[in-house]
Length: 184
Image: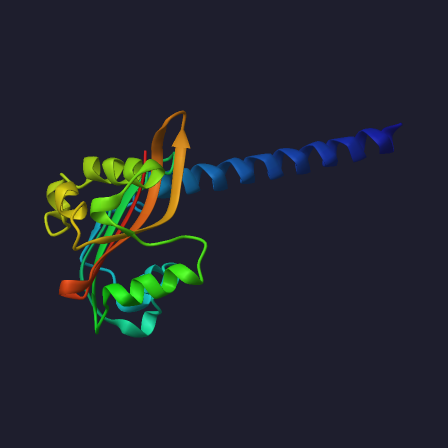
């Protein structure tokens, strides 16, 4: 009986140690995410940081010349955030965009011909694009012109409204790509 009590005592001590260590680790992680680990980053992105944008829309990252501007907001505990990039390309034409439509499930849409979910997502983006931190990003009306193409990578709905979107805009006349990602 004595041996059983001693064994139970050590199991209990070990369990308390594991629980306390876990609580300290989780508390530290939350503190880090809410303080030092979540900072706004302005014009800090490099080409390797944004290569995924051109890969996602099937343009290929070899066309990227430089990141002109970037903005990454702080991350909230729930994951809410806003990221935007302006990327200079070596060369891109409307024909390049149309060619990628054939081999892809997602398609480029001309800004003046939007409907359905893509139209909803561009409206959603328009709300975020009024922030001072992204004055270099085209406003919603500019994105809806025949000079801009939209690639909807991801649109998440809650009910009948977008709550998150990942959109890629290309303005071939300027050889410029604009990336938008936001989550409420």
